[in-house]
Length: 107
Image (tube, rainbow, N blue to C red; front, side, top):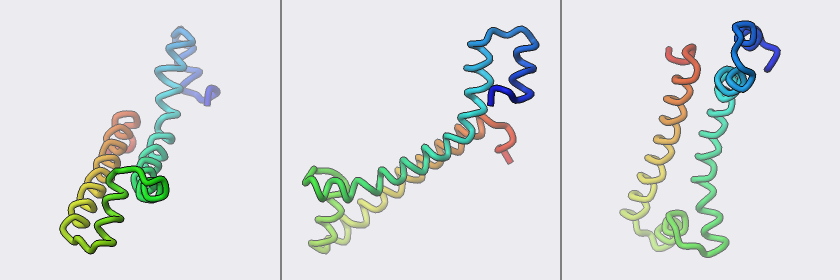
């Protein structure tokens, strides 16, 4: 990554090494890392159901499992809407951040 043409150009312009790394290299590296973070956030959200059930922690995951077992349809629907909204907001934040970092993604 630090041997790319745009990094060499930034160094040739006379920019400080810290500025080259923080402004140019990190920005280019984050383009490929941010989608992974978004997907992992979705997995954490869905994994909360398992963790909260196994360790008997109160939370949305355990609430959903209890609602499913007691056949509380309205609570299940509300919980699914909340989880789905959080998942969509995570993906929206990832898309916006990625389009800010990489102008090629704006299409």
